[in-house]
Amino acid sequence: MKRFKLLVVFYLSTIVALFIYSFTQVDLSLTLSKVSVYQFIEKYLQNLGFFQRPLSTAIYVIILTLLTSFYFIFLYQILKKKINARSIWKIIIFTTVVLVFSYNAFSYDLFNYIFDAKIVTHYHLLPYFYSALNFPKDPMLSFMRWTHRTFPYGPSWLALTAPLSFIGMNYFLPTFFLFKFLMGASFIGSCYLIYKISQRLFPENALLNLAFFALNPLVLIETLVSAHNDIPMIFFFLLSIYLFLEKKKILSFVVNIFSIGIKFSTGVVFPLFLVLEFFDRTKRKINWEKFFIWSFLLSLLTVILATVRTTFQPWYLIFPLSLATFIPRKYYIFIPTIIATIFGLLIYAPYVYMTDYAKQYPQFINYIEIAGLLAILLFTLVYYLKLKISPKH
Image (cartoon, rainbow, N blue to C red; front, top):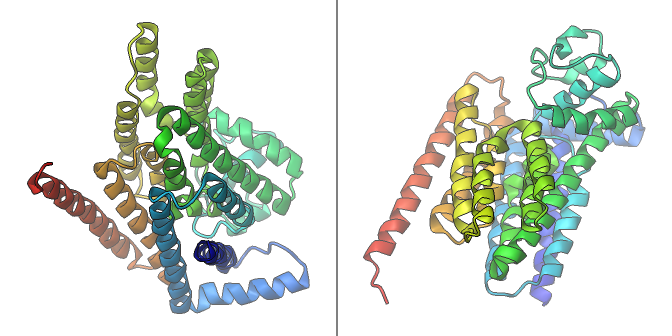
């Protein structure tokens, strides 16, 4: 018991370290607060992040290593039935509460979400036809990127974010945290739905499934720190599955469409929902394990298509991970997702060390991506061959 408590204390300390570290990446053109004490701390952390890059990278790698190590330890403890659900939920809630107040350290997308909604609530126009560059005097442009692009998401995302922008009344910091709270609520909601769905379909693995997603370092960074809108999309997708299990099929269909209307990625799995409906109507037994396997495979198409359209980004993996979490005991699911998680996190090391503006940056990223893909193929193949040649009992 004492060892477990010590383990939790070290893990939560690492989460706090990640929270503090996130502020080393605050854009030099952005001041989050005029409070003198905060400004002193912010300047110190910015100096670390932007002018002591080797040290900053070392700190990032240490935090990454610790989070990944704790992740494996927790999964092992769950498999050995040494952790109960209450303990895991306490860890998840603490992690969410801390990281929801972090800075979006590794992505500028959150600023684009805020500005897209601002076009509606402040400029009274539609972001489908206007970009941030159409408003050159807006102070947000000084710390934004991708200011030339128009709104790339569905109407559901605008329906979720425009009210937050309205409540924020065009004040940046309150609006910033309202958006972060949306991501935090979506994360907690997704974790809850993963647990409830698993209790219905895979009761013996419910806690493992929950931890596989909720404590995954890449999931934590991309959903709670960088705050990508994949997590609200995933929440509504999971809610549609839960509603289907509850026999609320019309509402399930509506929620599924709403999920697709956030970021479109969940649309690739929609045909499988039609298969579920057909099976249910014809009184056939639904093989939920196969449903999640095929859903996972289809979700990889979104990663491939997005990568071909632009370049690979680590947060593309969050949707596949939310499906893999229901079938983590399959080696051909577990091995690729774990390796992808590690290499997805490593991609940010060159970002921290040299910024994505550096000439060598794309080359370093390509090396990491190729190494990650080869590692997935190699380790999966090795394990497959091991199963083939091992004696059967």
